Image (cartoon, rainbow, N blue to C red; front, side, top):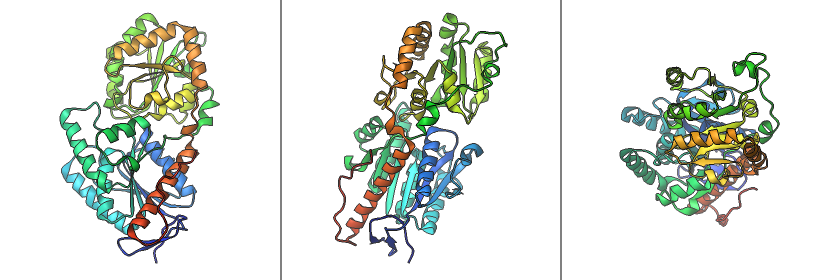
Length: 424
């Protein structure tokens, strides 16, 4: 008998396999790529938590990976690359990846498949359904049909609606994202849950600036400390680094000594560096590349930024606030759950980066207001973003979904749990 692992009892799957739910579960996560982004780190946290709790965890990933995030994966988590699983739409590669996933799920005898991000979510859920996986969970880190073209919106909505009936649970990173999914007709309300993307809060609350901060900002030994702006984001189109540099002159004119620190890496980094040179911003803009000490960069900053046009509820905003730094961000679904204008930051219109630049300059010129917002940031209740709580809530959802599956199969007289309370 091949066993899975939890604490609920026994059931028989559609393949005739009996699951001992008092033991460990075999959980398979699927993500398109593993880079240093919020969704990727969220996935790694979820994998590590389950593995540390005694579950058998496998992480299937696409062809794009970065060694630094791979190194963060717990050694107990098995990493497997999936041929053809890429972020961009490619019919030939997508069909190849779909069949590769079906074979993997069958070979692994997965009890739960938990998919992440849009592309892996579509292919992974259909593959899990075809393989007869008992429980299929989809993590919604970003809504792919917001702030995109008409054709792209139609395609994603159509595919999401097709995948919804085979999805046992949706886990959104914010209430705003959940509400957008429901309004678009993606699944029933009782299948949707909100679990905030957790991280180590204490690491950010107790951080100090890097020891080499003067060298980082390219300052001479006797130069005064300038106002420091920080944006931590992968260099990809939806983060809008280039567009922000094009309006940064509004800040530079009013505060010529201000330094903008852009932390992160990605496919557009070299192009953004070239753009900064073309605009004559070599002195004002610092590119740090990937850093494994983001909390220390936040401790160095006076004001933190995010100008993405499409996100879920970006965990980096919570990291800014945990570090006691106010944030100026473009309006995003779910953002107002934690970023409160006039209390701990400023929210500007999504399609008006010039307004964002004006707001940044105004804040840096008003040190008293900036200090008040910093105090508000430090006082923000971020307990829902504790990494341990995230793991407990996801585990509770897994247990509920498996209990419902068992009840639906009629393998037990146990009454299904219909309104499970997530851990607080």
